[in-house]
Amino acid sequence: MKKLLFFLLLSSLFSNAQEYVDLLKIGYGQTFNNDFEGTNKSTFVKFFDAGLILPVVINEKHVFITGADFSRNNLQLFPDAEYTSLYSTNLKIGLASTFSEKWTSTLVLLPKIASDYHAISGGDFYFGGFALIKFQKTEHLKYRFGIYASSEAFGLFTTPIIGWYYLSPNNRFEMDMSLPISADVSYSFGSTTLGVDYYGIGRSYNIHTKNELDMYVDLSSLEFASYIQFNAIEKSVLLRAKFGYSSNNYEVYAEGDNIDVGVSAFSFGDDRTQLNPNISGGLFLKFEAIYRFHIKTEEKEKEIENIID
Image (tube, rainbow, N blue to C red):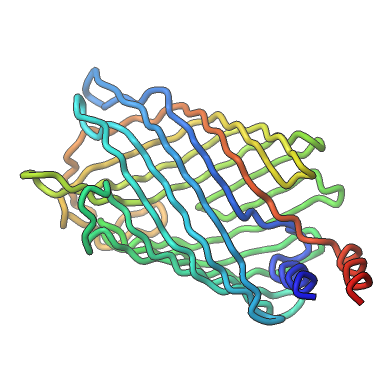
């Protein structure tokens, strides 16, 4: 009975259009070449990321969301410097609620630690979160509206979220939009899926150095990619290869050299002095593995209920 309740709650919380939840996602990739502007030097970026979501049923209206995200970026921040690893680890603590057949909400808190992890201190802790309201327009279309905000090494950052999720009646064409943060458009041919996606990253990392000025990295990156995806084990295990372009803007500033506030792509009160040369964008290759939990259809739920009864 608990298993059936879990299926029913996920169906109501994620709505008819989206019939799955990605519980685990792992990715690894590398850029090919990133030039330091004004020099003849270059670097490349190796990156690894992993994300986990564990929903816990509370009652018929609410699901408690837990999970974590981890990322590591490795690159040279200055010409001829040693490679630096930048880490970010955040927890996911939230609540997904159902108000009616049309309206649902998701509220998630995102405390995190982001630095080079050489000497973790209180200054490496940041706090963020997002809130979403979702409206089921039709059986195949759902709208989402919300806001994301986070404290960062450079100050407060926030952005509105406007998007939609659409799944065609034949379950082949899919659009998952949460602008300006992410976008994914794909078409499934059964065992293979072709798609294009976009991801806008805004993060910061403290850097701890011995006998030198403490600094932080302001990462502002826009990633555009095409991908081919192989769908295995009844489309529960997805193996994805991506090729694209990332702006890879890793700007270094002195600790305390902040902006007033950042709103989406705009910075207000930004009179900072950048310490490293600009790093150009570059092409990248990335591989991802995803474990996707498929929510049961109404017919399958009834079959389960009949078996239980």
